[in-house]
Image 1: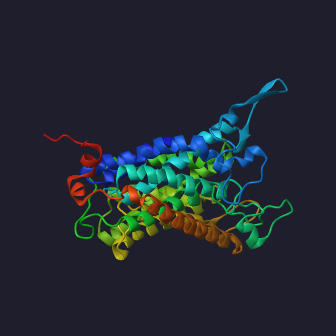
Image 2: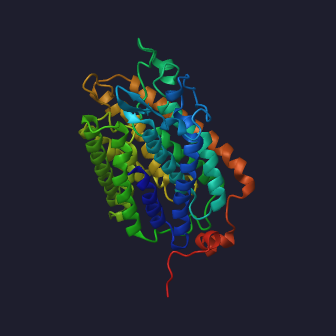
Image 3: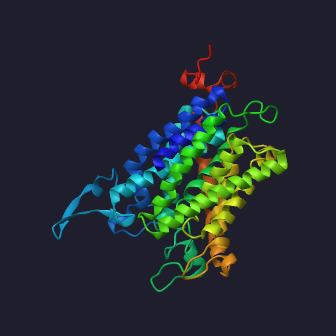
Length: 422
């Protein structure tokens, strides 16, 4: 289901693009699918999670890329009490190789998400080179830092433990919450998109002409596929069909629906009409916001979180005109803004039967502080690392020529056109 999200994103981004660049936009998602899948099997999983299998202490920033290179080590079995036992990982009863397959799909779509910020002007070969370096230098370390026992996790060596101490077992008293990827996927991709949009520069005609989606049904189809696949993204992160999985399913639906309504309300008040592209964008904003928070909220809290996400993202997409950066398909306005809100909003809306962690449920400030600090650390890390990588690949040539951009990047980069119109 999560793997299906990347072709869904291709339709979403492709529909938002102009007719002469739809294939290139879709190819950037498919390129990510091919490139990152291979890299993840070779060294990505090892860098992210190998210490969980090797007995070594988890690194603060990443694990060794060589300890589980190729992940063949996770295919071994042994007999225990007459039954076949697998190498476990991720979840106690789930074979580690299945955890590899699941986590691979997260890495794929994170790279693909970035492409929306550089639509219609970036060379395809440079995009692939950037993606290979970025997923290695940025995504795998951040996944380890948050989910693999590193610097942004709840481990005794992490930043949360430095802020508010550790418990009797040596874990952070106030652990960061990112159930399915608010920091690892959305803040990460959104910040990378902002950096690339600034460094790459504006499309020809930005601010002087309207860039209208060439195929709105594609946009709606892509949003529908993303919404469907997102249940794998969020619910699948529980690793079992239990009450938490049901909570995550309901929360994901409630937040997404509320965000769509929030976005449409902003459009109606601001522009006088509610649009289908706005509905699709609101859906994505809600999905993004609930991703880190989906197991920590009540359904009512999820409606509140989602509605605010829809409003914030609908307002944020106009920032590119105010500040002059060309975030072509609103990766910053949707993924960065909603990802930040979803991560930080946990400090307000978090609820559990044992204790109320969020401020709105009688909790103290500590969870909010931890969420803000982790989000800021992710922003700074991704921003600096992405800028460095951008300068490393600059000799390959970032942009197509102005003539090629005018002709259409589909024809000049891929020698194809999406539609043969007689």
